[in-house]
Image (cartoon, rainbow over all chains, first blue to last red; front, side, top):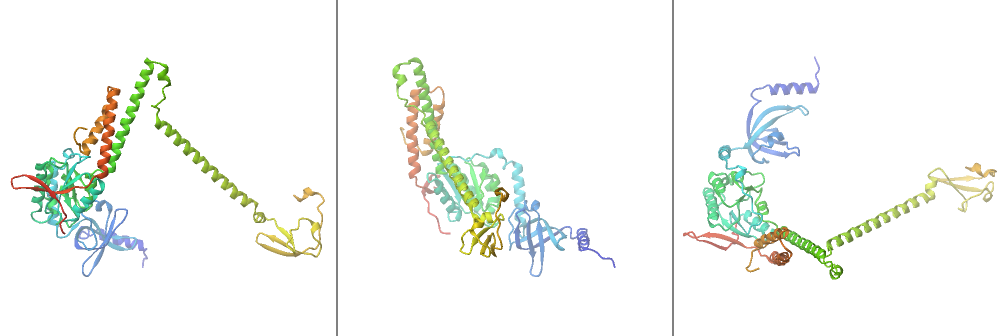
Length: 406
Length: 77
């Protein structure tokens, strides 16, 4: 019998699976479990029913076009093909597209309306109005009870309490929500007291967010004279309102950040302006003085104390000198510290022993520096790097030529 | 400043002043005047920034189309 490698078997099964016309294009309705989003953008999960499970992978190129964020526990319809992952010999569903199960009809309506409005030009960049950078009043069209309104009030108050918020309470879900929202947008426009409008709500299911996918809301946003920031649901939710709005914010808090300039930003702007006019005045005065000097080069003028000296240049110079001084000081401290360390290291007798030299002492521990310090038969200790040799002197010789020592 | 300006108006005026002062045509005397006004505006702006209190109201429209603002309080969820 012919023997095959595992790779050959797996390759064979893979080809077998991929050539099957049924497995090449299947749609499965099931619940997601073990959902994992890899940093590469690929997503891995298991689809399961009461009795069985199948591993699934959706590559980043497909996953990027998902219109919702899948998660464990969610019921979905996944389309793709079955093949084998050769490395582990496991077959899996390679998902090419996926949508939440049961709301396929809503999705179709969404896609149809989106395509129609896009074609009609409602999403075109040329109709987008800039969001005012210094609004006095911001109208907030949302539910008066949700987390959205609270977040917007909090963020706005923190960023710039000087901006007034006018809440326009509306229903944000249910049958009448779309008409209510559209009506509120028209109302704020008729009133005319707001510089910017935020319209939105907090997160929810696609059904909860549905009002923001209706044509009546899309049109009201489009025809608003006042620039509108949409803030519907979470970062991953894209509603039709988001496409029509002049700006889309990922969340209600983010909408407040986009709509309301930070007080400190305004403060900085003010300071910059003040500096600009001060510089300008100084320059103007200097120019004038120079012109005066030219015309009347009088003794008085020449010797007038130079009140108009450029203080900034002087302070700048001082600062540079100070930093230079500190840097030099630190550098010299660092150097002397290093030298100190080097010296300690080099001078240690142990360091010399490490090179192969040894230290000889008599039995009292006195270092023997000359043959005259020791007699035959006397006990000595020879200290090496890693230990001590106990020895007895068997003889001694003088070195005649001192140079030979080396 | 003759009449009370809003913060935004004050900042806008300050921007105008900066532009006017950067214009070569503007003479020293007007520059000094403009500068004085600019400094006053800055003080005024800084003052507003320092003590602003957030205002949150609710927009109401009566049956005959008259708009009013009344104070807004968060409802219960």
